[in-house]
Length: 353
Image 1: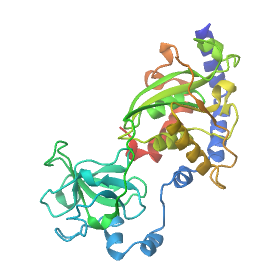
Image 2: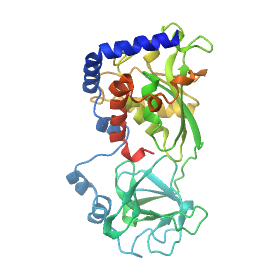
Image 3: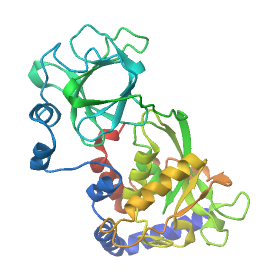
Image 4: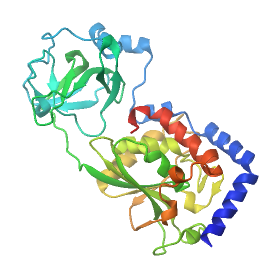
């Protein structure tokens, strides 16, 4: 019975390929560009002139033009006070005082970063060298470079320009659990699973069912819409590498959260937009993100995403797991999943594995 339902789906896809493509185009028109989502969720994007008006000449040279201050000259080089080091361009919290150590190199050095994907890393082959550049994940500002010659247990040395940083004395950063789970519904779980599997810091993605009233539902039951379940993915992630905010950012880019019980050609309550959280800390972040995205001009309609505590999660049948990677030549994968993957790869290239 399950495979019969699958065959029907393939026939519909093949017969209505143009309709699906058109639907995909319509969806692309409905969803606001990723840059607006990023801005609404705290990403800082300014014109070059706006940066010049905001920063000092030295901050602009380093943060926006990838400059380097002379060794032994930075204001924060010898700072030993308790507090938090933040990005001078946007205030993003990057390092704490207990991460700082004396490397003897002439620049402020840190052996770790504040958890949550605060810093992006890029291959840098400038000046005839191969290095790892580090930039602020919120505003893209150049911070310095990461080396693996540190004198502490981590053996890491974040070599940072003082001008890239501000220091907030006495401030503390709340530590969060390293391993977290969140359950997300964003239409067909094949699409959502494929997107999150590509992200750095995501440990596992399991397709399944949640939010319904029937125990251990089968796919054929869920597709009727009568069990009350949504197709979802259980995302397990390392919060020191990717934050819940970033997980949610991808979630809201990969689907349209303004269409009730529908994603493109997939229609039914099982395709509803949903977030099932595991603790109140997650809920607070989810509420904050949705409030930001409900601001005018982010989406063309209000967000209808269901937000509820996680009840039972039921793993889907084995043939649903890692579906795109196992069936990438199938019509549905090419016509529906691949365009979403390409969108995520373009918007979050710095977060890919």
